[in-house]
Image (cartoon, rainbow, N blue to C red; front, side, top):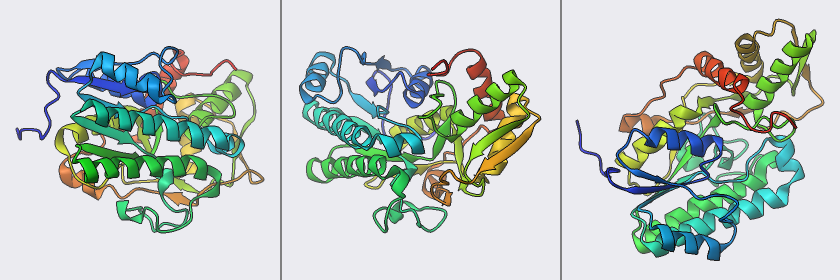
Length: 319
């Protein structure tokens, strides 16, 4: 077996955002590594305050930082809370990256989002499509913050020689997802909607938009595995896309969710609602060339996610 570029054995790994879907998946994956996992209680450390972050770093002295902390949500949340999506994310990422550099953290991994790419970017989207055109208006606040994070990571690499890298995940779902009726992403929103329709014995389920846009979806535990792979095996200047390399229409995805939840009624598309970008598919050839590929297929991942939902593993199910 090839020796990794970076050895996690014995390292103190701080996962910022460990209570969220992505952070908790990374914590689960790190459990199989011989490292010490560090987390920070949200109630005790406000990541939007530089002094609080600096104080935490001085007391805990991490070797590795994974930035999975972020203000996230779907189209409705982005449209109605632009301040939170821009300000909170800018502060969180800037404070953590700056503190990591000042504390001498040996490895940093920043998680971005595929919404950083232009709305009309050629498909599948290559890493060099960044900043080549206008963003999708429905999530530009979040996108601008994530682009700033990527560039700050690049800046510390260029100016200080820091071993800081970024990854761009595609659309995610899985255990610990946010099922808020207004603030969730497509997979969680549909799982909740179909589940409630099943419980109410409703004859149909309404899905926002035309159903025509194409999206790529990745199970969050596969993302976590990719993140650990990148930490151990990558130290390049550019960021890496993480995804499956395949996509489906929202209509096809809705039918898969219906199957996973057992819903047998009609699916109705509300074309008065926004579609968002017409297509979002990542070019994952760089990551594939390094030797990583996803393991969990879409139908299996949806079944696992719905099982977690039924067990109460998701957030904001009762609002």
